[in-house]
Amino acid sequence: MGRKRKERFDSGGMYFNKNDSKAASKIDRATAKAEKTELKIRLAEAKSKKRKWLAILLGLGIAIYFIVSSGSGLSVLNTIKGFLPTGD
Image (cartoon, rainbow, N blue to C red; front, side):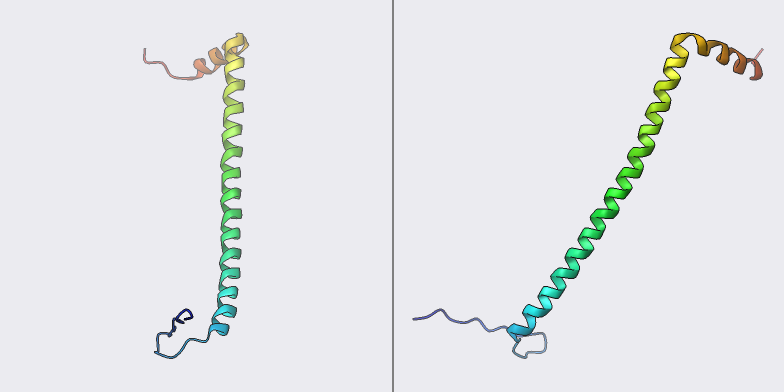
């Protein structure tokens, strides 16, 4: 005895042509794969922009730390403090 063939019907109750479904499913898979690839590219671009700004902020923070810790930044800070209003 052979394996019983399962019949497939579309939503209208008609027999679903197997050959047409393969061609349609290949096209659907190809478009889905292309969309997924495009979404991955967009995600990578967004992450790279975020990381770029994070690297700039880290570099700026380290530079400010070295300026202040070396002592040469104290004169700059004292000049800036002179312009700020005090609570006295």
